[in-house]
Image 1 (cartoon, rainbow, N blue to C red):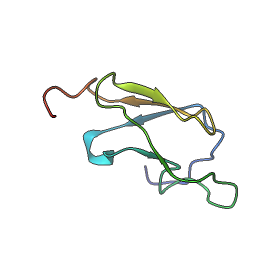
Image 2 (cartoon, rainbow, N blue to C red):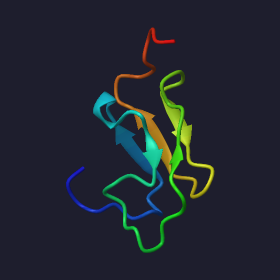
Image 3 (cartoon, helix red, strand yellow):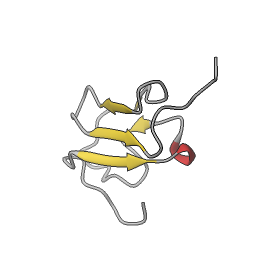
Length: 67
């Protein structure tokens, strides 16, 4: 993501390079941001932020393996 993302955006695709996933992401506007929360996206490939409702999907789907 190269341009700022508003915190009200409803869906963001992320890649393995964005893991561990947290919201707000670095490219989001910070003046109205909520506290950083880490989101467990690896098992299902999708997750929603409990603070702002932004939905994230992992490009390529769930990550196999791991602990």
